[in-house]
Image (cartoon, rainbow, N blue to C red):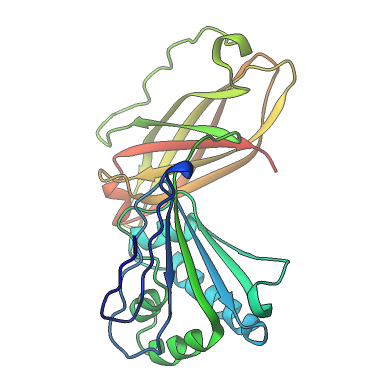
Length: 282
């Protein structure tokens, strides 16, 4: 079906049942008018945005996107910081239609109810420069954008497991011993057995969150993994993250990894649970 709306964009939606009803929207950008643009929200596991940029404007587009990413990282809004943590930008090696340079934005996972419209982000983070930056951004596009909502079919890189960890818990709960796993039992090369955390130090500026991650290796060879630990509020939004790389788990074994992160106030006081993501090291 196709829809047309009065406003700054024409939206075309195409549903293809054979690929899980992927949602495709093509935005035809109009000159910046100083008015709020329509919000770009994803309602899926991940989101993909293809930006078709004039070849001669590619460098300036990349500079503006870099400014947006830095602004998101330094935002006081936890939702904006969460966007920056999960927003990756790529430039296609192959040229696009009419010689356009294609920039790909991937939000994986996407942040629920977060606006990914670049114009709205510029207006929010850089109000004094918004009009000039938005005008430049509009001039960079040659064919606008293609936006896709993506539904996860399978994740071959790793698994994620969440464990609710109330702030009031006085100490880390002991980990219940888990029988040694085998490939035949789980069908996965590795798995997260538990993730726990507790506040070990606090002041008016930051809280120190110590975490403990237990991972099992179900293969006959040792594996090196990378982990991301997310500290989330009660709504599931990321307040802060910690990362650890090169975590080695022996063959058919289990390994406990520990670390800590300083989470700034006032966000630290809103942390209600800890979430771990683990994948093979790159």
